[in-house]
Image 1 (tube, one colour):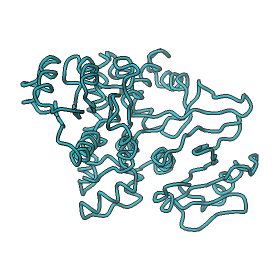
Image 2: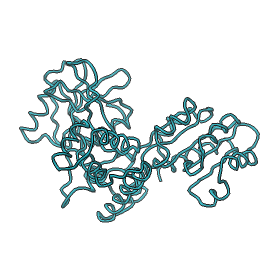
Image 3: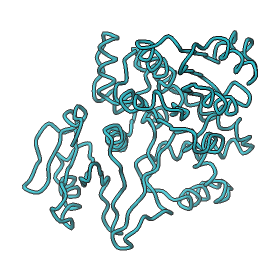
Image 4: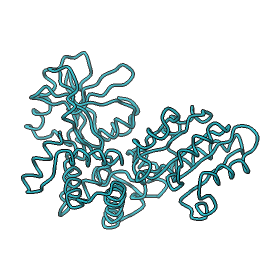
Length: 393
């Protein structure tokens, strides 16, 4: 498995901090592997390290509670700062008590865990002010290429647009196996984790809403628009229930919402947002007869890549026109349109006209999967294959 340097660079300054380091993100995105990489880096300078994987049944039997864990650490730590790694920490009852105690006992604590138990809202509540969190995502394309080289295989850009970047998925060679793995992962995250955790009784309604959201990625939503759709299909559900279900998906990092900014209102429109899938495979596994939604998956991937490159994102909407992304970083702002192709004249005109009302004080960019260069005097065209390899815009 590859070293995820971008995340390691972000976490390294906190190696010796007394803050609890939380590695978070969607299930099977590589959190445990990253935790091991951090541990291996620290091993280069000290042996005062304790790593406990609570996925291992022998560790759960040996260390079933907080007192046993604290005793175990005291017995095995050496003099000086001890680095304690707790993987799948949610399997330990009252894990937060253990973390809080260890941090004041000359320990630098690193934890990761399944999102069915360790969600953003939970650790915010349990560890208030005593933690720093790092969100890990599925592979972006540059990481896919690095891992593909390890596996001695080739992954095309179209493969990426269809199947996304869950690391384990890349190990399968045929479409049937990929879809089987991703469908089982989907069931674990959505059906098992969330339904069981929140004791969702309206299981069929939950599945319908989840399916609707996942196949509608890269579109503007409000809870009320989902409610109207459900009513049109004769599904009886309340607005508050839909709002709760959306929040569950966000807490499990299955979806991400990008806020709309209105230049007329000069503020964010909190009741509307564009919803994107954490991984485009959630859309593709729901496709019928291999009619994959490449257009919306493409926009979704541009967003994922921008986040990986460190940009803050919102969507610009003046009531009539929408710019997909306004990306900001280091006091620089970029207006970005994402389109699978603009080779068709009507598509070209539709995409470029959106830039007309914007002044030229900030760079205007269109990203497409076309081979031809469609740059103009005021709009910069970036080919998707080049964008994927860029560190900065």
